[in-house]
Length: 135
Image 1 (spheres, rainbow, N blue to C red):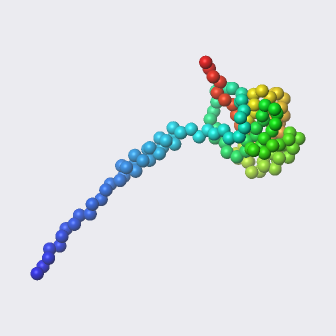
Image 2 (image 1 turned 135 degrees about the vertical axis):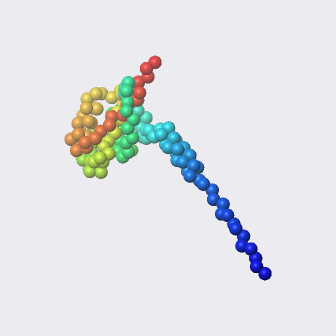
Image 3 (image 1 turned 120 degrees about the vertical axis):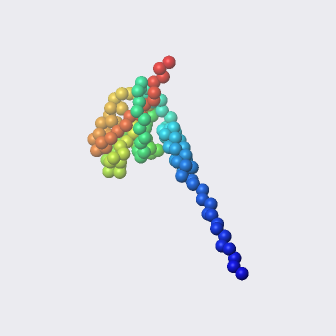
């Protein structure tokens, strides 16, 4: 007795369109999300009418309203700031440093800190601001 061979078809599911939809959703959520974060101190930053969103990682130099300096979470004296910045300058060669200074501090201190950053060999510095409320 001979048995017939059964022709069985393999069922395949085409998932190409599903992958496309998932990829588009991923792109949508990545573009629509904001990645700005403000770690550290509570400061009243100066206001600016126009700003560019820049994502910086690494070191942030905070100058609080009582003129205390913080490099990330570490307190730094003004006279020791240049040496500390020179020590970290090779680490942040391409990244740069973010300067967040309270709007109530004296202008001379901000200029002095910016000068120390330049003297220490750090080539890139971003000054943090907030958007000016037009109303």
